[in-house]
Image 1 (cartoon, rainbow over the protein chains, first blue to last red):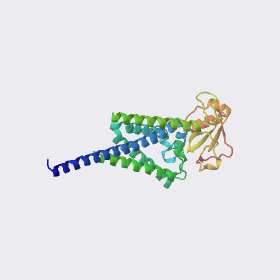
Image 2: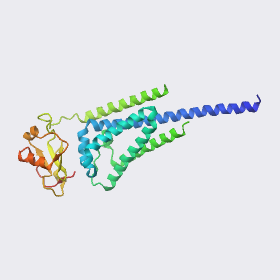
Image 3: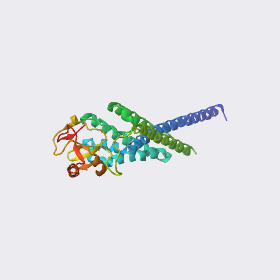
Image 4: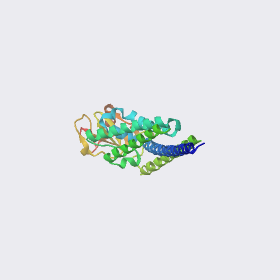
Length: 159
Length: 121
């Protein structure tokens, strides 16, 4: 084996090690983002279910959705729980992130439309998140959307 | 094994979220409500407001009659009387026919300052 071959082999081993480290870091980052998303959705879903009558009452006050308030009041927390389950199970993380992104985008569109067109802004999002102003709420959602997109990008580049 | 580790972590965070949510909501619900149901399955709230035309919902806090606007055939807000507490069923919403029956039976009285309008807080 000549000197050149040894050098090439060495660089391959180093690159492989670097690559493995990169993958490990990506894995940890994806896991951290997923855990954050699980916490957010389970926390808000439980808050909505624990004080369901209050959440339902709040939805009745929103003109455009008041006719479907009863169904929405159950559908939203159940969808949040389902997405959290998808994120918990390692095999369905990708689907979980996509559904998390979709649901949160839908919530953000709802908030933005409320900010633009509604006279009154009732928020019944559950728990301490209700204490945020509507603009802060939009930024909060956008941060989570960015995190989910980043996690999906990392998942794609992961070998 | 690696996947099992992730699953356990996810379940732990989930359990934390649920307990944290239960804790914060239990804290906010700790206030003793004066509007306890007299009979099981009967209305627990002290007020009923007309939030959409001929659509009524129970309200736990006194409706601010300044928020009554628009026109309607029935009152914007009603107080539930003590006999109403034992007779009005606990529902998410009430129709105008039901409200008329309750008013005729003195189970509901128009809230002070209420008018024939919609309650839009």
